[in-house]
Length: 222
Ligand code: ADP
Ligand code: MG
Image (cartoon, rainbow, N blue to C red):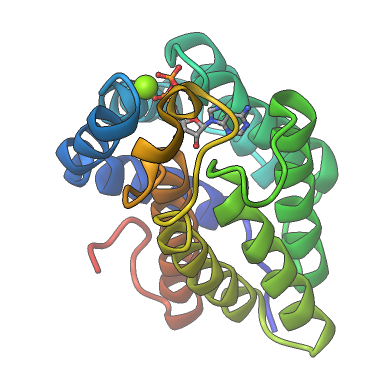
């Protein structure tokens, strides 16, 4: 069956912008509890800028869409998350190259490359209570789904499910990276904001893919 094309990549970014805007206050509150309270604001600013750039220079391939996202997030999002997400999208762009459509294997490879970029940049390990705790289970679930012959939309669905579980699993952890690490035990009981935003963004990828698979108009609300 059809791979995921540029329409999907653009729909993903647009849907992410909508979801980040919708959850802006929630992400601010998560970051206020164990950080400095700017994560929702940072992400909303970045994705709003992505929407503007998509209108200015529509990308011609999924890789070009990822690169546009990377450059925008790196330049518009301050703090830790901008360079981390920027690196993630840049590595994903490199992983898919000039491909016009992404099959299941390439989708899984792009997610793995994105996660590897976050780890290379931030040096966090699993269990450090960061976005890596959402990304790594997502990458593993995507690889398993792709290996079992799942369609690209199902690969992303498995990744999103695992990312959501991974974000919830950060609640009881002590942070070992980022601002939350200054709180030691006081971070226990709070969800990592970057893991939460990563789960939202991966769910947006899966939802955009289900729409593409069912022929719904791109960017349609869930
Ligand atoms: P800042 O911490 O600079 O205010 P944000 O609030 O936008 O930046 O982002 C915070 C999120 O960034 C954290 O919740 C965590 O998920 C992620 N993060 C911070 N440091 C790292 C790191 N070294 N590796 C991976 N993720 C990190
Ligand atoms: Mg912050």
